[in-house]
Image (cartoon, rainbow, N blue to C red):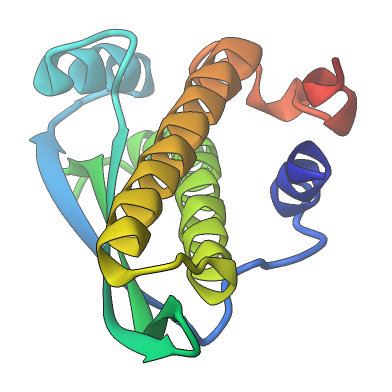
Amino acid sequence: MKLIMLLLVFAGLTSRVNGEVIEDVDFQYYQISARTPGEVSSAIGKASGSVLWTGFTRWKIDRWYGFKESGGECSPQSAKVYLSIRYKMPKLFRAYTDPAVKRTFDRYYKSLMKHEEGHADVARMAAVDIDQMLTEISADDCTSLKRLENQKFQEIIREHRLLGKRYDLITNHGRNQDRFHRGMFEK
């Protein structure tokens, strides 16, 4: 089921983020400068410090919940899930750059951002899965609940980090992004 939802999110057919997940998105930019369209790619690679990773998406999930004890059972109450997404992306240094350079940069940026948004979608899926887990989990006592919740939280994070790595392998870090399709996640 998780792979089907991942495919639907990547295909743009659904958004799994609901009102229970509080999302914060931020961008950090590094400057590039190019005089000709042919210099754009090398300028981005040089400024980013990597030819492979010219854009980067970091995500972190935190959660908060109170406890509700009732009838010999403990469950989370008033749970909130916080998702923080940070993009690191190139930015063209000069506004007065040659229009051909700007067009080349804009095409590169659009393609790179499309790939990085795929990583953000994986993070959103993790946040929704954590939110769902918090609505379903319970234990005999609150100490056990906290231990079980932390174990499940770590499992969800690990699972989605692996999905992000698999996404990079399938898309070759965005180089094959336009060839990405649903069947690539089938076993």
